[in-house]
Amino acid sequence: MHRRPDEVSIEDEDHIVSAELSKEFPGARCPYTVKGLEGLDPYPHYDRMREYGDIVWYEGMKAWLVLTADGCRRMMQNDVSRLRFWTADLSDEAKEIQGRRGLKLATGEYHYKLHSWWVRQFAATGIEPFREPGIRPLVHNLIDRFIERGKVDLIEEFAALLPVRAVCVIMGLPWQDDAWVDKCFQTMKPIEQFFNYSSVGGDDIMQAARAAANKMNQTLMPFVEARRNAGGAGDGADMITRLWRDGPGLRSDWNTEDVVTNVRHLFFAGSETTVHSLASALNVLLTQPEIKEQIRAVGDKGIPNFIEEVMRLYGPVQFRSRKANEDIKIEGVLIPKDGAVVSAQGAANRDPKKYPNPNAIDLNRRAPRDHIAFNTGPRTCVGASLARMEMQEAAKALLERLPDLRLDPQAPRPTLQGFQLRAFAPIKALFTPGRKSG
Ligand code: HEM
Image (cartoon, rainbow, N blue to C red; front, side):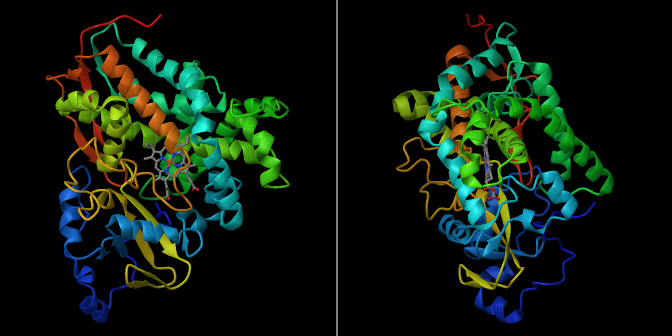
């Protein structure tokens, strides 16, 4: 198994912190590490690290870790231009599997154009048309599957099923066809395994990922081809139709591969992240029952603000790594060309300089969306509004339809699991059985 290019390991001998730097920056001597925190609560450790400075040297990653909200924002302002994304250093084979013509491998001016296009598609006018006819019925359909039973595994039977189907909804793919969705989901697994959050797999895993990427392309192709001349107008059209409609304005040689690769990238980017975020939101609802009352007290903004606080406190993406394209100063520290710097999003979102009472849920914060759980800067998450819609609709429907939803006392308690991607699991719950929706 070889490392993903953005993961800097302890074996790397370059970028050692010099004695001089160590004198200048207390952060260069930070004795705390996030190593070994897999499956443990990392937040007290981030606080201890922050005592050494806004940016600290982390020997385990041989990288500088930016721990503050403003620092991470400033760092990401340099993204794409002076800092590079992990995909830039992938091998040719890995680039082929990732798909050369999608957002993940796009750089420079083309990345800007394509990213801006996606941001417009996910802006309120672009995404709201999917809420009532698409995401809401999907959420109710999933609840109908277990509502008469009085017990549910909220991760396996709900959180894990929603995001991949939500991507199908916006793409105009058959979300009601469980067999088809399951085929897509299973096909994605070897690719996810290859590009997992801490490493890039070895040759055997690469072969499986290549086969899976081909299979995924073949699965999507009939839908992509069928929409080629659909010519859908306005924001009501599904995203595949919009890709065909606007693609030639993004690049003159726009073709089927562009459409398929972009669809595939959204499947990946929008699935696991949202599953984990939803799991953490459900965990908070079930383990802090007073939150339900607070949501009601806040009124219309109650659920949206609750979701933002969950993202701030438990956003699943803990770190985003970059390498420097040139010598660059970040928070006063010189990161040498090809040196690594990490935005510690999980730490930044609890930065006490930015958030009063940072570890508590507060549904009345002045700017609830002012966190970086979806990152910030040129590579900020394009699908944040879809993820928000899914989580809001899920929380609303569960609160309305299963008012006494509670943790199953016989089941193991949820714990915070994972490392780069973190979320609570398992979440097994009981409730008074209800009726299926019409
Ligand atoms: C709550 C769920 C989600 C979280 C926490 C999340 C988080 C993130 C983060 C942190 C990034 C930046 C990665 C980096 O800069 O290294 C990102 C990028 C991205 N996200 Fe999301 N995301 C979520 C849901 C979605 C959804 C639903 C979609 C689309 C269906 C999506 C599509 C993307 C894409 C395409 C990018 C790449 C942007 C680029 O490279 O230019 N995400 N996401």
